[in-house]
Length: 343
Image 1 (tube, rainbow, N blue to C red):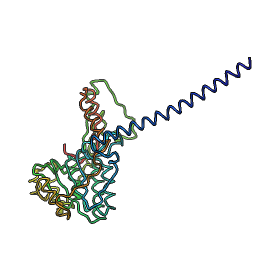
Image 2: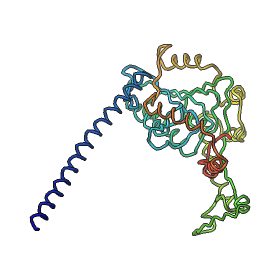
Image 3: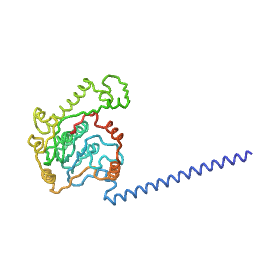
Image 4: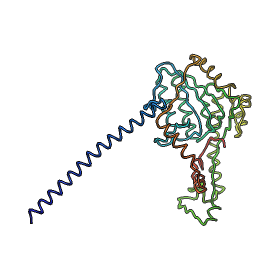
């Protein structure tokens, strides 16, 4: 009896070992096949679209160049790294631009920076951080920064451009919107009708300031207004320094309104009005570059850009329900945040 039990144990152990080894071997070959399939897919995409797989890495020119940084779309913190790339579709990528400017400071081939601006603005924090980084670049390298305004260069987009030595604007550009906004959405009446209650346990009467489920008190409104006023003082001071204007004069034109390119030129918010091609020729001349010189654009096309484009198109094609739309409104990233933004 004992012999049979012993053999049963031995057979069970052998089966366990065989199964384990088989799993390891199978896993190894499956992983190897997956890597080969992934590589083949990347090669296919690269061949079809003419994109290098490692193009996401910085590959600065080995001859004199001007870096073009696209301030396009809403200025905000970069999205988490994933296939849904923050640069896809020409959108603003804060982390990439901060790193790029750092790299350019130590690149002797770089002769300057062109800010291509087509933005309604964005968050106070990111707008100021990139502005400060660009000013550090100018201080360290003594190289010029120019800006070209496309269809819009408002609020935070204009703020960042105050690092520029010269600003060219398209004749159809809207710019200005010098000011600060905090937008709050209150759903208390709706929640009362639906019988929904949000309970906030706080350490003080102003801890839940801006809650969508509670009315804003006079005290809380004054608190938020003080934050807006402080950011506004910072903004007007930056414009006064960047455009060499008295602060008092800046404040007379900084009431939040948007200006046309000609109106902006008349009040010294931009230097000249011209088309993009004409502006690039003027910039190349000032930078001491050839008339048809190429500009280095950080990020460029990458495999993640392609996937992002495909995913975004598929996502936008799906019709959203009323509940999804309401949920997006309630979770709006701009809700309750200090913004240099043109609504």
